Image 1 (cartoon, one colour):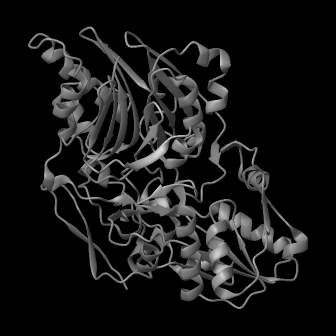
Image 2: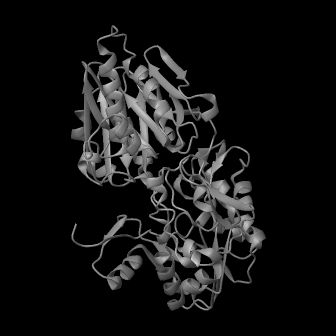
Image 3: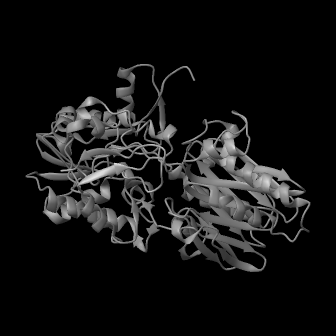
Length: 515
């Protein structure tokens, strides 16, 4: 694309995708899958796809765009079958193209299967080399997994009779070699399979229909089709759904199982009506705001949240502080996630396409403005300028998570370390860059407490620089893109010396003294 494509919400992390799998004899599975994907649209807006099976043949439809753009009644009517999977994608590996839209399909040794993936593998390059794949033969980590599974099915095809379990056996062989974040849904002609990596970086849950089962990234996808939430799929678990019922298989060694749900599922990614670790996400975000009010009080006239994800924390801040809550920004809900702009002037106008201030609310008032995170800072800076122009007397910025300083390798798209505002500036320098009267980030211990699941297990690598799964050297080069100003960064965390985990053939490096 010739023109520069700029994310209007570039002050927030961006996710990988949402996945769903449904086994429901006698039901319109394609339509149910569509509804589930619609409930998961927030997790990815680049492409959408559904695969269904009538027990004999798999049919796949996928295309670029939103779920409602890709599917209509005519297309859904052609997707016959009693089981199916679906995916809505935001690319973190592989280009944003039809070829990389999912579900990924393979037909091998008289068997068919389709795969949908949420997450990001960290050892894709190594696995491809070990399998003897030439550069360019795979287009994404999801494509690699499908190819490895297909090769395994083909390898065993001549040595065993078909009993319908070829896919799960192939997965049991392939899965232990995968590293990083992966919540998969797969299907063959007769089975639905859901898999969560040993750390459980990305969510996946199981729901029960009156006559069937649903696997989905988040619980609202269950709600929309009338499925009852049963439980979260455990880290390291493979759930197989077939005509005989539901079975669980554990293909990973016990020492690899270590729950590390991404903390930003609570902060930003998950829908507010989702349940994670038996906690309601909206209530957790409200508690984050209450914690912020206790940690960083401000003398102000009004509290306002940045739509949409900053609003629950703003409500909590207002409740705890006693400062009235007001709506100060109106969000245009009909704008797409991208805005093509050839220069900075038009990109600045793009922010106004998304947010517009309510002057009567803002003018003459001291504001506490609450948001969930700051990644690159450009949109936040433009928003502050709008509030100033609308007559705000003071602006006290409060962020319901710690400074975002490290790139994610497990399914969030944040760019390299040099692009992250808090990696290169101190909190005081960010305050000056944003032109706010004060700036405070929620500390990590208070954030964990606000989730209501402090001891359940979280990954906070983007906040601390400590990665639960080793990062290969070729990927870790991104981490080392550190500007000289990084050496004196202030932080609200206190954890002694932190280290990044590198492969065995490189040296662990002290990153910084956290103060």
